Image 1 (cartoon, protein in one colour):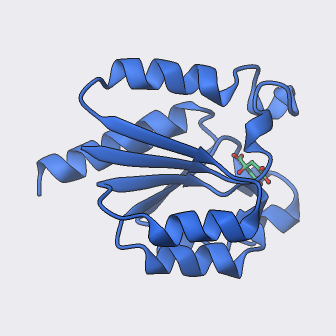
Image 2 (cartoon, helix red, strand yellow; image 1 turned 135 degrees about the vertical axis):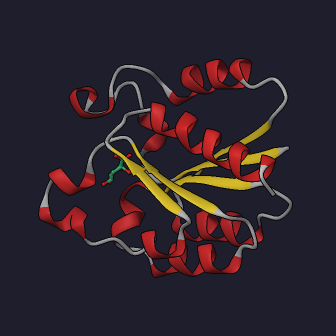
Length: 142
Ligand code: DQA
């Protein structure tokens, strides 16, 4: 089974960026563990700061059982990312490390959630594993 994890803008700085909110672990370190925990799953990974490139990667994704997407700040601003989610045939699970509902009011605006099959937020990096578990379960009952 193939799963695509896509992180958007500024998520390349996990581990050093606002560690009180996002923690001390880099995504590469986390991903290494995740890949080891799921040896039967092929996990592709992309981190992209450019909005257009991000939208294109989502829209062109094919043949994945699911996409696990954290668009970062584009969540709150990007019609392009929202349109890309509508374009890809792959189901998309939205993940945020922080609880976007308990932060600044501008994070309440969400362009992407309604086009995703579900959203996980506020559970830190574990949100990615939970999203993966959901995709695996969905596939095993299909
Ligand atoms: C984030 C939440 C966004 O509001 C923020 O802009 C991010 C990270 C999260 O994972 O909690 O860059 O997507």
